[in-house]
Length: 273
Image (cartoon, rainbow, N blue to C red; front, side):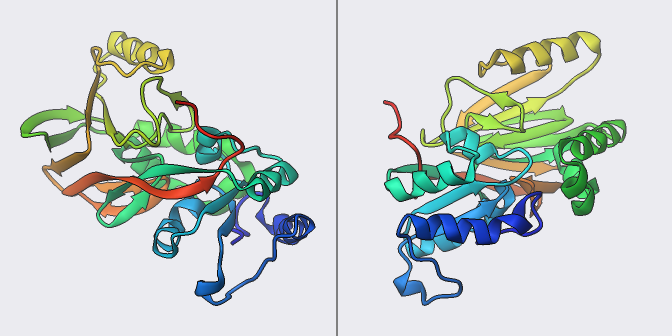
């Protein structure tokens, strides 16, 4: 599977087939599903996310060749960005079982969210992203921040209910998300989801949130609240769009849940304990 709309996708298809065949991996397009031993995909995080149902249904490993803007999943699993090295990883056959998140029937690897990030996704034009990459996303982010308004949220988890206002609510399945953030005490195979709610009211809280986020620790500070569970029910006063790994995932209300050890991905080395 090659996403020809990703920044390097068009030139990857033939090169990918050649590299795989050089490693005695037979490639096929549209083959009988029963004969498939694995699925290899080249593209960005959205490409990999869209393949989750197929990979889970077939019960075969997923090989990823990073060719997107953020490449969050590849960074999480230390999959090399170089095409030949990524193919070496697939040929070596080492896999890691990972969790996936699910919201409104849509699966995701890294995070699902409402608020500013959802607006960024809806404002972002694919042709601008393909042409300008990260610069296009940053420009759209500034536009989204300018139109952000607090969202009234109610969250149920572990028998408790919390109500608050937020400008960004993220439900993360991995320790890496958003293209910038990495949290120490979380993992893509720990069986948990982590909620991060940004509730900035003034410069002092903005500074506190920024410092907490870039410290890499999962902690609640003024302007940032965090919760951990394996299932969250989220309601809002009016429906709000949800995005999951940059892909549309319906609207609120919604139930977020984790599917532990849902599938296997080829990785360059076994996970550490």
